[in-house]
Length: 108
Image 1 (cartoon, rainbow, N blue to C red):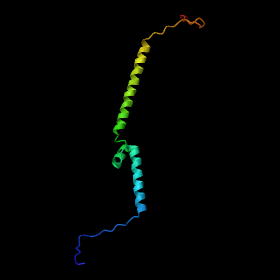
Image 2 (image 1 turned 45 degrees about the vertical axis):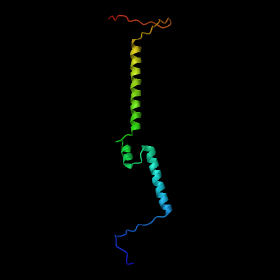
Image 3 (image 1 turned 60 degrees about the vertical axis):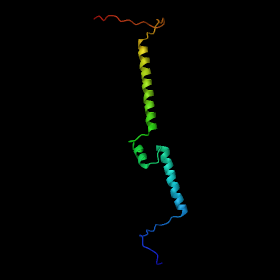
């Protein structure tokens, strides 16, 4: 015992059983997998920003942009169709069985 030197204090920690450690690690792993599936990241700060709507993943930005382009193209097609339809004259034939109404001048 003469060769023992004091280096520092030892802070004892409570030891957990293998089963408790396994359960904690498994729960943490499952939580990380759920967060990754939902937000695409295991970083809890990024996941919190994405959940609050302050941050959007790049894949979501691409999806939103493609949807905007698709809506703009559909709107442009509808405008072209409406302009074409308003310029097109539809020939109308007189229907023999339909009554013909005419206006007569009003007299007092």
